[in-house]
Image 1: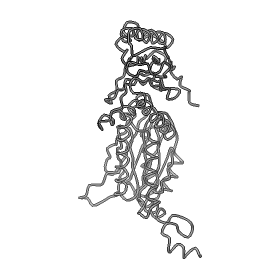
Image 2: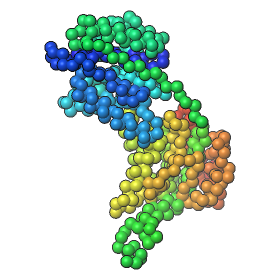
Image 3: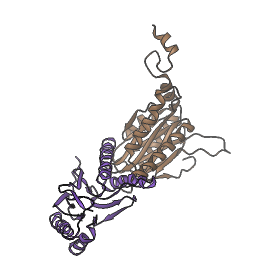
Amino acid sequence: MTTIVGIKTKDGVVLGSDKRASKGFFIGSKIVQKIAKIDETLAVAIAGQLSDAEYIIKVAKAERRLMELRRGFPLTVKESTRLIANLAYSGLRNYQPYYVELLVAGVDQHGAHVYAADMSGAITSEDFASSGSGSPIAYGVLESLYNKEIKNEQAKEIATRAVAAAMERDPGSGNGIDVLAIPTITMEVAA
Amino acid sequence: MSESSNAGRFPFYGPQGRLVLVDSALEAVSRGSTTIGIKTPKFAILSSQIKPTHPLIEPSEKIFSIDYHVGATGAGYIGDILQLIDTLRLEAQKHKLTYESPIDTDSLAKHLSTYLHNYTTYAVRPQAASIILAGADETGVQLYQVDPSGTFFRGSGFVIGQASDIALDVVTKEYSADLTQQQAIDLSKKAIEKALGEKPIVETGIVLAGENTFHKIPFEKGN
């Protein structure tokens, strides 16, 4: 169930999601937050088992903070995604997979990034990505509206329309849209 | 209780409140081969004197690659140095498996510091080796010295081993941030020569900013 989308732009990344939590054929909640902000530069959109995703995000948050304190500069988006993927992979290999498909999006000194990470432990770098039961519908919108030149402002609009389209036809998605935009950091010039 | 009777029963602290085993390890380092690290914003070099052995014996390697972007050298017992080098190599690869990115020099220095510090807290022999680490990462080129106590320093010039005070004088006097690579290599050789009072055999390695690579410079005999 769920529809989440992630879009990489010229000046950052945008994540979008619906707000429905399904319990079988019943709507368990209509106000679920599926976009989790890890810090000012990184966020994760969640599809799948919420408890598993919450756990992975909690660990990633702690590891990221620890690493930043220890080495003096933060983990890159790719480093953070690999960390999450390693957790997912160890779950898979122990026959207790984390039932998640995550979109990890953020900005670092190398620019903006969107990664798709699933329970297999694989990660792929994407210009735009969608996940959850509504993703085939969302992809239809993303494929026709996305281009590499867009900025966050336009991407917010595209994300909203992609999730809205999925909510129209996918019974697993609905009850409103959340959007989060993260702008690229302007590097401070070292004194 | 008098100080001297305490020193006899308790193995770690000496009468002056110093860790005797750690002091001895440092003493062993100061009898090791003269070893230098010099850093500028563009590069860092590592140089170590290779002690002359029997003509039929190949001299042992003193400059070590830790990963593509980090090099290290050391002074002290070669067995201990090799052990520490391997610890660093292992940590570099662990980081790569966990984060899919090359480890930064600071993390390596801190790991080595923790590893060495453990040897000062239990009744074992501290590692008789000081290590100089040079690496390039997001923060630029970095140079570290890590001592047997676990103490570590970041800086632009380090000398450890035999007559290190004399060599350090030479390096300190002639150091400048705009040394060229060749000038830095020559300075390290000059410093070692001054310290030992003879022309030494020196092995050298270099880390380059931008490229983020470390490589050894093949040494010429009697150079």
